[in-house]
Length: 371
Ligand code: PMP
Image (cartoon, rainbow, N blue to C red; front, side, top):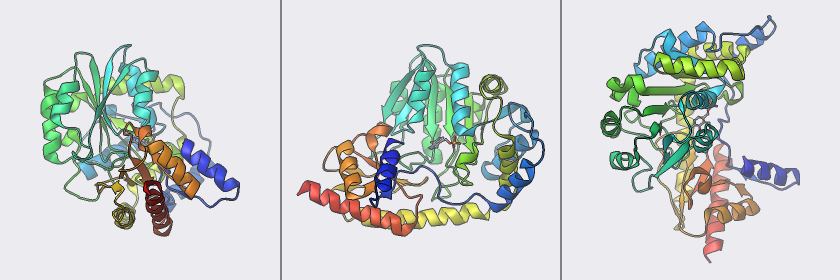
């Protein structure tokens, strides 16, 4: 957010800045979803149930069954203001002071701060580039204590783009079986943006016996380019869903009724756009990687999903390098923001020409720093 703000400031001052900081799709929302929202907005819009309108809960359940072959009942789903609020509500409903939450790094910056806001303790487990930024069963086992309340899994991951294979998830599940008091967050907000069909398996698919401990979170933000509409949902055991809904009731009642109606239509309408956009992201990923690979100062793991490149820097400290890049005309986010100093995050949720220009600036600037 800070880098995007500085990029906007430089632009306002008349400088040309390539902005690779953005964590949101650059596509338009599906036209049929927008049309449904327009029609809905002229009708009286009253409070909806805190856990979402029944049509949306049903549409989300059906989409999960269609895409990931997982079945949930109506009492096992709650809608909130984006995946973010569902996760926060779940933490708030379950965490007590001093509880621990295992968060593999690099991580989405909100997880540790949400945990702290709930009075609990984030336990960061670094995952190296050599491991493909994946949490290993051994690292998980070493981090679990009797105070562990949640283990956070996110795939495809922000910012590294890593996904887990079936076997990798089965390995984690084996460890989790030995620690029955830990709940498991499976943040699947990037589920539709992954580049190898075989790769993505939700831990809920791989370990059905753990189902009563898993909160599976998804939403319309990334898949349907509807970040600002604020619609996300979580599937989980009834008691947890009740807790999430109770917190929701007392903070913002529900997410926008108009947005919920648009989300139903996005989920039920034609789905071809998901594959088309994935292919567009893939072309961008490959174009950006091709340029970054030319630099001997960068080591970039090919992301399996999401829309970020996460190169490791062989020269300079990430915050200083990000500053130098901004001066040179390209805004990026230093890896420190994600618990992984020494890296940069570049978003390829932008057109190829812009991305290529940004990557060229990065390569040239690093040559300059090392000279
Ligand atoms: N999880 C991850 C890993 C994310 O990157 C984001 C958005 N940046 C979210 C959750 C939040 O998504 P939403 O817009 O649905 O709140």
